Image (cartoon, rainbow, N blue to C red):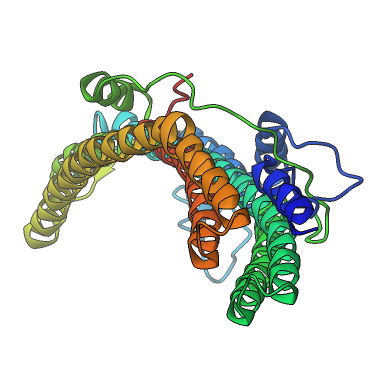
Amino acid sequence: MHARFAIIFLLLSMLPAAPSLYASQNAPPEDLARLIDQALSGNPNLKVSASHVVTLHKRAEQAGSLEDPMLMLKIQNGIVTDPLSFTRDSMTQKVIGISQQFPYFGKRSLQKEVAAREADAYHFAHEERRVELIRMVKEAYYQLFFTDRSLAIVDKNIGVMESFITLAQTKYSVGQGAQQDIFKAQLERSKMLDMRITLRQQRKSLEIALNSLLYRPATTPVGQIPDFGIGAAPPAAERLLVLAEEGRPALNSLRLQVEKAKGEFALAQKDFYPDFNVSFEYMQRQRAMGSDGADMYSLGVTFNLPVRKQRREAKLAESSSEITMASEELNAQRNTVATGIADLLTQMERRRQLVELYKTGIIPQAEQSLESAAIGYRVNKVDFLTLLDSRVTLFNYEREYYDSLADYQMKKAQLEALVGKELE
């Protein structure tokens, strides 16, 4: 009888991990590209950001426009004792005038340029939010994959532990085993049940996080995550740095912030020169006091006197400081990108090697060790603790294999976010 049980648990221990039963039975397998599209089209924060980009571009269109002209209507030199009479005095006039403010030469174009740079910089900030959203969706996707595979492995091992308990009980009943073996197997099974409870809760939390990113109800079921491979190795660090300079929205945004600050500096320099106001007035008169009542006009130019040097010099210093600040932020971001690329490439290479090692070396060897321990235990050449240790070792290696596989893809998603482009 105990030989029959040994065969049962040996077969159970060799079974591959089945797909998780905790993904929704009604939900189809999830497609990463579809999830990303849904997040990009439905996320409200992204919609707010896109609307703000439109707002800033419209504001830039206004920045280079002239102020509205001023229309003036008045009675000039009226007589107080006869306010509506235009014939008692030849200087009483009905006046209509118009005036227009003109900034100093070059100010309008600079104002428009500064506003346009701000709008473009925010556009790339919006693109950076898209990149970050894609990264978060991918990370949640691959975490779900690892959780599902872990649940499947735990379920398989619970079944194996139950067969271990049955076998230990059988051997104990015929005087070939120790009662302690039964307790050890039951304890290990309880550990697996505890892990299953934790993993179920983790999957629910990951579902909620993913649904939040996709802006759909938190209870929306998330289906099974299909299997995937490692894929092609990423480009070298030098090539990734070039791609980041071209495609990382955050770098483009900071470059435009530098250009905006330079435009504000040039505008501050223009502030040392006066703005002009051109006015024209037409004065209509009536015949009075022997005057022929000829109409008159007035044409003039007024301008401010930029004598408040302290305020203008402070504004110039402020603009210069903003150039320095924006430039150093750009340099800091470039340094962050460079170090991030180097670190992620190192971590990805480690995970790539581990995946290959687990797949072709460690897991097959652990399976052979478990098979040998199972056969040895059946014929009383191996104790139960050795058999149990072999099963737990294989369990840990199987989880570490999927952990390395999922973590590699998450690191790749982080690398793509760092570079600003898809790598495949």
